[in-house]
Amino acid sequence: MKSTPIVQILEPFLLQKKVELYIKREDLNHPVISGNKLRKLKYNLLEACRLGYDTLLTFGGAFSNHIYAVAGAGSEFGFKTIGLIRGEEHRPLNHTLSFARERGMELHYIDRNSYRKKQEVDFLKGLEHRFGPFYLLPEGGTNELAIEGCKEMAEEIDESFHFVCCPVGTGGTLAGIIRGLGGRKKVIGFSSLKGDFLTNEVSALVGEFYENWNIENDYHFGGYAKIKPELINFILDFEQKHQIPLEPIYTGKMLYGIYDLIGKGGFPTNSKILALHTGGLQGNLGFSFRKSLQR
Ligand SMILES: *Cc1c(COP(=O)(O)O)cnc(C)c1O
Image 1 (cartoon, rainbow, N blue to C red):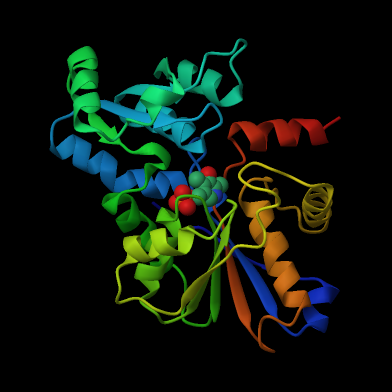
Image 2: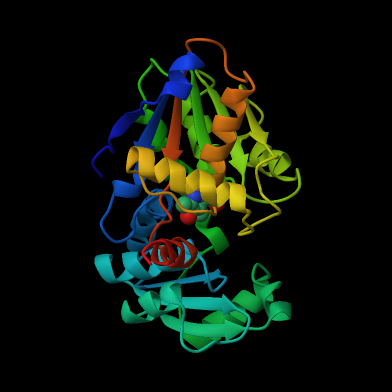
């Protein structure tokens, strides 16, 4: 994987606050799969290959960027893919699921009760009985190998930055960044979910030896996939000024949070801040959001 570009964001507000803001364009890392989901898949795909699997099986909601990425990676790298989707089928398929199907993913719908059992041994045995052998990718794609893949993003960040910011869903990406940077820079996660449980979950993923990070829990805008007019206005304004597309689930919330913290003096003078653009533009909400802007 080529390392992705880092661009500086220039505007009077940042000059006035005496901080520098840069964006690492992970959204440009691959034409189809794009963003952190590809980083999370890399070592899992190599492992599936090494173990001789030709099928990937995974779980997700109907709007999942992970489902999109697994379907894309499967067709790109020659795996059969099976997606178990939470809930009932809705026709027509949304953008994410129709893409997945075009890419050859076999879609099955499971009710919410069964979905909760997705990590239980008996349930997984049943799936193997039904579908044959498969390499299992967890919902959201977070596992140890995913964290290894995300560490490589950190290796592309040079020493001059003081802060690295990253959006958080399951926390796998953030955990990889924290481990990759090994405490050398302050890492700030911006949670897209309501609640403060993610600090514990990410602690478990990074291990106790890593410090110098925290999660901001005040920028979820009501919870996962929830939006508010001030978020949308911020995204539109940012895109117009800087020609960098954002989506409202992860990257928009993170950048809103960064600007808010800068405004409140949350970063010391002369800070050099790097924000990770984790992609998500191709996914359903990113996609329909973009379409709604094109009217
Ligand atoms: C999935 C996703 C995230 C969250 O990644 P986690 O590793 O689950 O925390 C962030 N940004 C985008 C665009 C995503 O699709």
